[in-house]
Image 1: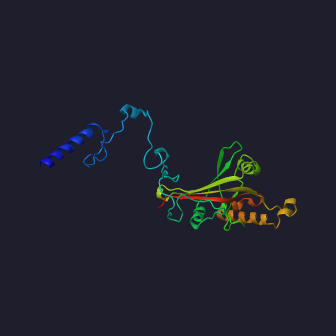
Image 2: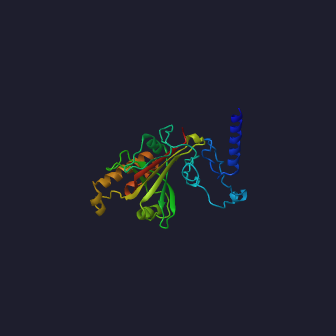
Image 3: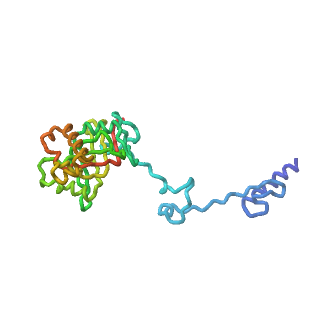
Length: 272
């Protein structure tokens, strides 16, 4: 019993000595009696609260990978008529894909997009002015039932006889713009006070002037008579007249048309 009591006192003495002097022999190692004595952990000095707030001193790297400011931000969800506030990729009532963009080399129009184009009575044509400003004008249009030889959708807009600042169609701002910069956009939308019914469709493409088929006695007539361009112009005029009765009293066959070869399609709909 005496030996056991002596041993306990000896252990306590060695433990007290190790706590007072971490560098003493046996501290953190095996003691003289084979007992493992733990060395007290040394705490790292902390910066003062004011230094931490002001950001003074070196910063330690955060655990878990990249710093906070490098974390990828979550994409904001669109809402309202501009395509903001709802997830993309769903299919709307009527078939329009939400926030979908057809960016392939040969874009296509699904049936829902064609239905929207058929129901809408006008589009907004956007051209680029010589000073770089966008220029917008409402236009009538007709979508050809078949794409061109490369598979691109074709859309035609008339330069009609409505009152204009200039009687010469080639002096119209939209014509000057597209002759200098052929890139254009057409926006068609469906508006409703019930915002669950909103939708829009944007067609981007290259615009050109499609000249009319002139009379057989003229130089232009010799070039266009019976040509593919002349047949294309005649088909577009017939399509516009079937869509807009007002054009049945206008001489569209004698006027150029704007032809848009669509190379990008983007659609949005609020419906779930």
